[in-house]
Amino acid sequence: MNSNIDFGDIFDKEYQKVNKMRPNILVVGKTGVGKSTLVNAIFSGKIAETGVGTPVSKNLTKYEREGVPVSIWDTRGLELKEEAQIQTKQEIIDEIRELKKENDIIKQINVCWYCINYLGKRIEESEIEWIQQIAHEVPVIIVLTQTQSKKDDEFYKSIRSMEIPYKQVMRVLAEPFYFDDDMMIKPHGLKELSDVTFQILPEQLRKAYISAQKVDLQKKINTAWIAAGTAITGSAASAFLPPGADLAGVAAAQAGMLASITVIFGLEFGKNFFVSVVAGIGSRAGITAGITYFFGSLAKATGVGYVAASGIEAAVNTGISTALAVAYINVCTRLVEGRLNNKSNEEILEMINNEFTKQRNEKNPKPDGLD
Image 1 (tube, rainbow, N blue to C red):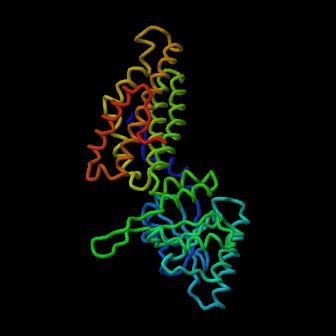
Image 2 (cartoon, helix red, strand yellow):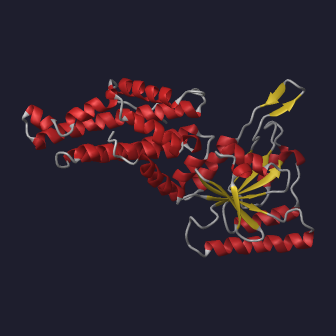
Image 3 (tube, rainbow, N blue to C red):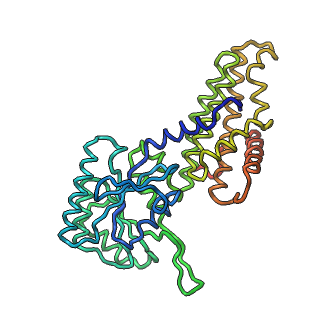
């Protein structure tokens, strides 16, 4: 890749494309139901612990964390006395309505997680009324937190049978539950809740949501591959630029492609990772040799003329960009899965290079685990 490329700037531009379309999720529930645990289990960056809380009003606080393109809105007032609680709830509804008046999906509440502790096996009449009020304004998912066993489904069925305008009722255990010293129930229901949320969100906000969440690796792979396809098409077109301009165009397109993939895979693959690792890709002969030969020199070397040479360049460039995208997605996938813990950036870079070489020999390279 071109040493004059500003990788930091390229990453910032790709991140901002996603960040400006971040979804807004309202999380409601009494103290102790596990709201923070749930949020931290689904999203990167431990937003509920380390995110910056911005009071939007006296009843709503918005939590955000740099590098995690989602906004979590928390409510107050569910522990107040009944009279004060009624007033506070109405004020929150009024605030949600005011946000809707903006007629802008990035300023509105897009979905609500209403959390109820499954172990309590009880929902109060005031909560039912509260859910109904919220559901008139935004889609509501009822989240039954701390669900240890799906076999004990009496309370779950009871909730589902109620005349509440919910979109779905989800049973979730956000963190391991230990009992009898050496016995443990594994977390469950997180991916399912994430998928229902994804389906409810406006399409324009889904890419940011996929980037922010950490429980559905499949969606990250699929989305990264779609983003790569768009960039590959662009880099192929760069082959038809005037001689001397094509290499810079393709290098920039490839850098943008890898930046987009990095953003999709989330917080752990942030700007520092991108700049240090992706900049190093340009020094790898296995990746750049093909580009160097076919760009700006093919017409002179073969004498076939620039127009004909450009057609060959486009095909070769597509193959190179595709192999690079697959290699990068596969290595990012392994990193997310924790299979490359304690690997240095230099070791990761070497893995990308080896994976690139492997994919160049494939007839139809595609990421591992592509849905």
